[in-house]
Length: 276
Image (cartoon, rainbow, N blue to C red; front, side, top):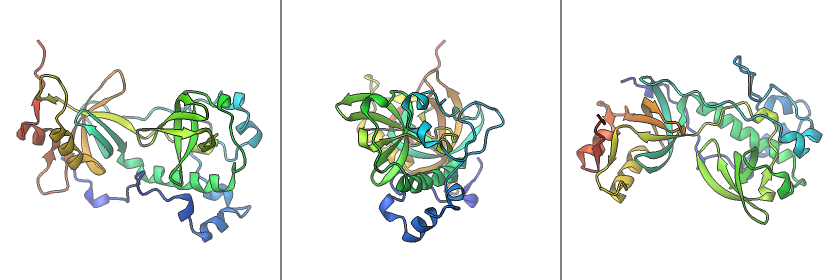
């Protein structure tokens, strides 16, 4: 099993994203200078594969706030997950149970960190007095969403009431409710990075109960072993709904620890027998 610990970088999570209020006066002063905007604000380079958002240095503000034109923008490319049998270094951002958790590619965490910081700087300077009408917000489309002093890339899931929408935070795999005032059009420069969160399950195991429901003990143990941890995943398959089946391995100790084996040893899971 490969060891990535010698090449660690600081991991960004929703819990430690720098908020608007925490930006220093020096950062704000620098970002307000005419020559610094293009340098400070994040812009993805155009992929050699084509597709997705084009490379654009500055947004046409009229086009950005023209909802009919904005709706025509193509969503970013899908995340490139390694093939079956390959390894992926990942950060586990959220655990619900052993067959329902969310990962972020470890290799692009620095890019995500920069994007989140630049989103905050951009929205500090733009759109403060502009508000979208609820009918101008398209379900299934990409926007910026404001939460806890920070800005995130969000897909509109559905409208849940007057002035309120359900959103999916694409880089952290979480659902939340936001007001219309917290939703803004997202400039092109923040579209190129593929959505970072991908849903996963531990491969080859299932709950011990006949009801196929994970015990609270199994959920808690999985959280303790994986949530907010940097682990190595062996890709074992991809389901039609996009869920990636992984064997997660903790390589931080002298001996590698396979998380599915721990759950099996504790009688919190059992092996899925192959069907004949």
